Image (tube, rainbow, N blue to C red; front, side, top):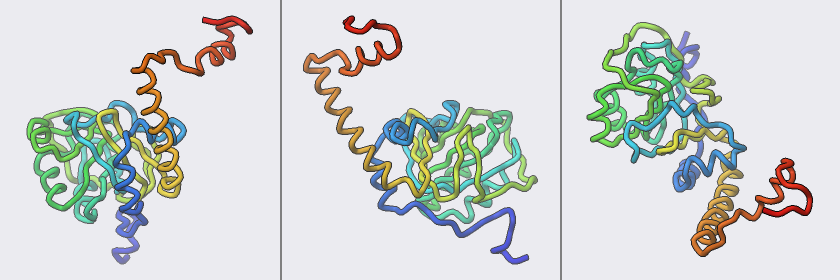
Length: 230
């Protein structure tokens, strides 16, 4: 079997275009999640190690058995600058899957960040360095490196379906994945939503406190009778 035919590691994937990554990075994960139909977010257990960490880029997907990081090492070896390594660690936090050494390797390789539905360690060094690392928890126990995993196959990470090359956005609120083909349309919607929200916040500060849709929504829900006002 040739390298290109490996069932465990896929090297060639179609990535979200760099110019779209740059545009998307200007938006909060929350804005993008809203325009994507309030779906595509990873479970809230996956958080940045430091609250200032932000990441944007195409997904390099990794699937591992709990507590083993062999496939993550393979992903680090084949990832390209700007990629985001996203790991289905099954939510297991009994052993860390990466620490300072692997995050340093990733940063030196030009990788944009690492997102793991699992544990990491060396949190003090990771926080001080600032390279974006998102994880479900911390544990000082180290991983094994002996069990086959998969790189660049479709995965489910913390409740979100991810295809290799999809757009990943992460910030203090968490992580959202946008299907690669949908990104241009979603970015246009994101700009409209951001403009609306900016205007609404300005109106609130000017004294327009009540949401304009509230009474209609209350009537639709049966909380107000027709003709009744708050």
